[in-house]
Image (cartoon, rainbow, N blue to C red; front, side, top):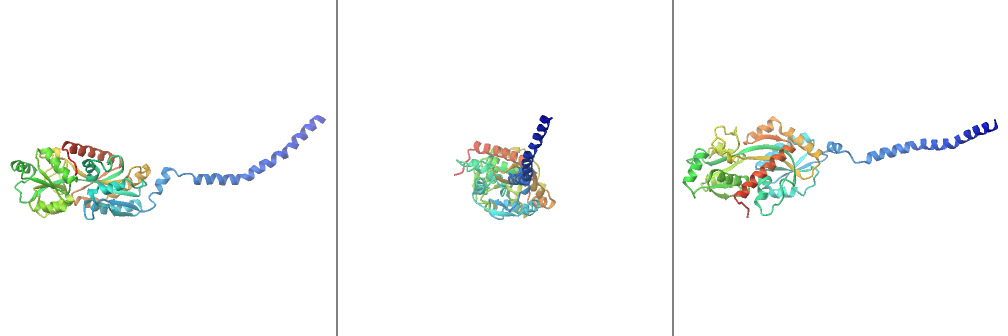
Length: 351
C-alpha cells in the first residue's frame, strides 16, 4: 500500500512541472502567428500576382520616326484604346533617326519590365540590321515580341502619264529601255529599297536604286520624272493615287487591296516572287516576364479589335491583323530569314 501511494504521489507531483511549459507555449501562440503572417507578407509575390499589379505607372511608347509618318499614325490610333485596355497612360516618345534603327538599338538597353515599348515595323526589325557590316542588334534575339497590329501590301506606282498601265507592262517597258529606268526609295535599307531589289530579282530587271531622305522627297522626284517607279506603303502613296497624280501598277500582297480593287496583285500577274507585306507591332526589350507579356498582348488584341480602329487602318491601305506574342514572334523570324536571304543574294550593304 505504501509503495502504491508513493507512486501516485510521484505521478501527481510531476504535473505542476509540465503545466507551466504548456502555458508558456500557449502564451507564445499569438507571437508565433504574427511571425508567420509577417513572413508570408514579406515573401515574394507569385508571378500571377505581380502581373495583376501591372501596369502601375505610365508606359513609354517609342516611335522611331518623326511625327506625321506611318509609324506615328499607328501609335496615335492605338494610343487611346490601349490606354483604356490597360487602364494606364501611354506616353509617346519620338526617337527618330537612321530609319528606326536608333530607337530599336536604344530599346535593347531598356529595363525589361514592360514599361518601355516600341512600335516595330519591317525596316529596322527585318531588313536594316542585315545591311550593315556589324549588326547594331539582333532583331530575333534581343527583343520581346508582344503582338502584331497590322499588315499591309505595298503598292508599285509610276507617274500617271507613264505608258505602262500595270506592272507587267512596266517591266516590258523597262526592258525595252534598259539603262534609262530606275527606282526610288525612302532611303537605303528601308522597305522601299528592298522592295525595289525584290522587283529586280523577280523580274530580271537591273533598275538603279535612287535613295532619298524619306518617302515624301522620293514621291516628289517620281512625280518630277527623275525616277520611274517606287514601291511603298499606302500611307504614303494613296493620297497621290486618289488625286490622279500617280498610277498604281500592282499591290505586293497575296490578294487585292480593298482600297484599290481594280489593281491586280503581283501573284495575279505571275510575279509571286515580289510578294511582300509590311508589318507593324508592339515589342519590348528581351526578357520581359511572360505574365507581363500576357497582360500587354491581351490588352493590345482588345484595343485593335474595334470597328473604328479597323476603319482607320483600312483608310490608309493597311489591315488590322492581330497576332499574339508567340505567333508574331514566329512571323518576324520568317520575315528576317526572307530579307536576309535577299540581301545576301544581291550582296547589298550600307556604306
